[in-house]
Length: 222
Image (cartoon, rainbow, N blue to C red):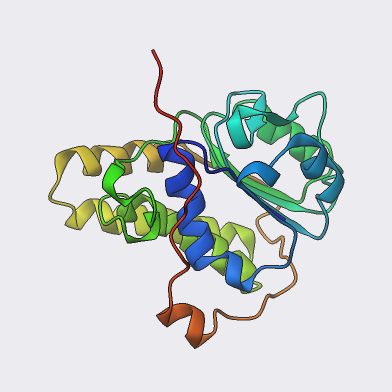
């Protein structure tokens, strides 16, 4: 299952990269935009892998319009699953709670997950070259898990890709984001955990991107 909120620039960016590079090879359900609500998330958290893009806090993970999908007191059945959250701060308490509840593995971030977004690419976020250095290591990590590789190895690949992008990044702001994210990335659970191997991303999906995202973007408020 994949949680894909689309209501502001950060969620459109992270969800957009997943829509482009992960969704075509994943099993339903895909909770996209307005479908990404607590009842659906709690009911449809099936299979052996939960992937979430959304805002978070030490104790909560949120979906569309910041609706809380799970917290340390109320979460779906995660026993035997791997959980990957592209979200802020969930490694502090929610990640350990997921492992305590029986999840085989968790990947997330201890502090904020930070990156630079090109607002002009909000309809086609997968074409955002400014966000790409941060987003693609996460995509590669998820795809390695879906390739049937050990979760600990996929996490190590993500960290190596962060480091590789740091070494070649000329923009100091993007580089500082990569350094910060690498330091705050967290893996918990069994490093040898694996999920069922998914089909590869077929050539048609590699060559033809999804249609533009047409749902409205919420303007930031003070």
